[in-house]
Image (tube, rainbow, N blue to C red; front, side):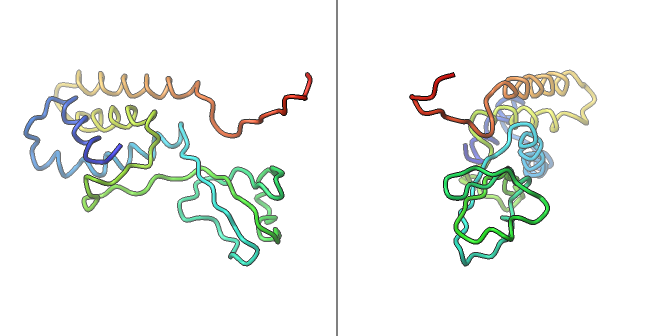
Length: 170
């Protein structure tokens, strides 16, 4: 989903046909916070392939390295430095932080949050937009919807799936 589409959905939820400048100014930081908050519960999975001559540094968007695949074998991440000792090509699988959203982010920018988790971000932004209002009913409703979306995401399979060959018998 693009940033512009997500903003439009938030404004529709809040029934803001002509939002004021102060709300428009707050939306980028609310989307940034929302994406990062949802990523804690529903990670953005990425991988980086390293060649034999590549520098052994973590990607800038890496939040938590999870495992390395080398020679087709999965190895768990060892935070004590084995990363630097790997000599050949390997692939690092990791949880990533979403790209920062700010006032310069174009409406056409594709957001990093997976599509199935975007509704949680949208409700989070709507709740944050209503958080300081005198009438707290809208905040309470949007925040409850946000928590419900997080709950719906919690039962989805995440991380590594292991596939057994057909000849494998349990």
